[in-house]
Image (cartoon, rainbow, N blue to C red; front, side, top):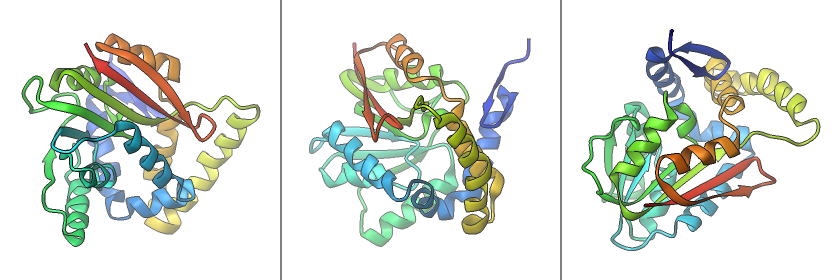
Length: 243
């Protein structure tokens, strides 16, 4: 039986997803933050602020910011004094983040090209693991969660910021129109790239429902996992403690 996974608007062989997702983010890396602003009306910045407040980074603690991309979360964590490793499977995104850090005079972050499903780190290395708007892009979510569990110290904290499935009356129809009509046009206007942004928005549709994802986090070995809705449930924080 062929192993297929979701690639936003279609199912593809699992062996192809990493490369295709990599191509998407290589295409949009330089204008990723501009697109985030356009697609969320700037709200992604508020979501990230609230996420980092929930993490409560402490001075000197080691945090792995997975799918750290352009550094938005890492910069906030570092401002609190944490020692942050920014990891992402896409070097183009890391390059953009490193350039931004250099312009801001931030020199104490570590940048590393890593696959969330197979991390090149020792067991029990980090005090906290964060991943924001990135876990839906991995090929096998369960493998990424297992790796997060492995690299965290006993008692380490896991935090994931991700879009939830919308359940409001009429929301599906509105979202269908937005994802099929509006987002591709935004991508075309700002980044000259319709398909990549269609993938980014469509990947939300196929992400596991929040209850199912919460069960996956618990199955990976995290205790006290809970979901905290933001902005009417469009975004949720999942946090757990390693046992």
